[in-house]
Image (cartoon, rainbow, N blue to C red; front, side, top):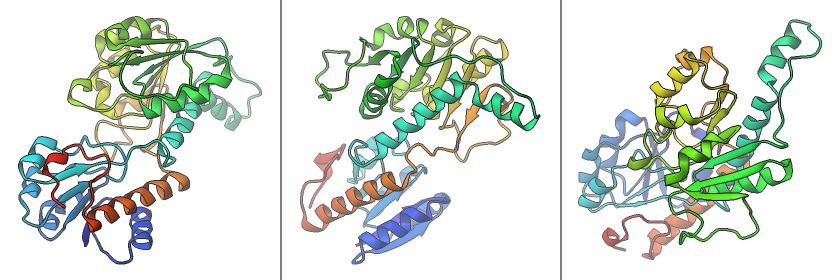
Length: 322
């Protein structure tokens, strides 16, 4: 089977798939080469790359298989119209959700304890630092309570923070959640403004679906305390960029931890970086355990393709023809 991986700087992923799929032909292409590469590929793998709709007209292309969860770079209706199946790899259990959750805790601790400022004082030879705060006794609002939100809540439980979850379905939603993970309050999306108003930290973990673009906009940011912090480990566009920049300029937000950006590759000269922002280059799931776990799940999916079995986590199974 010919599998085309569209990426820029993810050579380790390619090496893992070459190891796990020795029977298949693994080729690589740059994001701007996707349309041409799709003409010969049976499986297309976009890694932080958007797929132009022209690619779905390929006579050979059968499946767009994401190496991970996010499908925001895939026009699912266009793929469906072209008869191309689209699937992702659920984050829970692969080490992906768990890795992103660990980074989230890192952001929260660094922001609370003002670690970047402390590092600067150390470089200047100054003893001590201005007082930070603690997660102990604080309120952390999780915007999005899927796999990643749940794993963040699991890890926050030991910090003594009050945890508020916000999800579209609310506490009575049909989605199965681990009963061992508890939050202090679970609200539906209509109560988002109230949930952020009491938060000391807001963690954005909602998927970048069309309805979630700009979810954290001017109205929501205006409800936050000026002493509150926001952490985004979902996708850049879930937060309204202009609204966030405006909130910083008007000193209506204390700081942010951002692992995802509105344009990736990100701009190291982004105006946001002149404020109290801890930036990382979309590394949430980039751990040895996560990459191996996702690669093994990916290889298992290719095995299903080869055997003509139903696909796992396929968002348009009606077009899949084994």
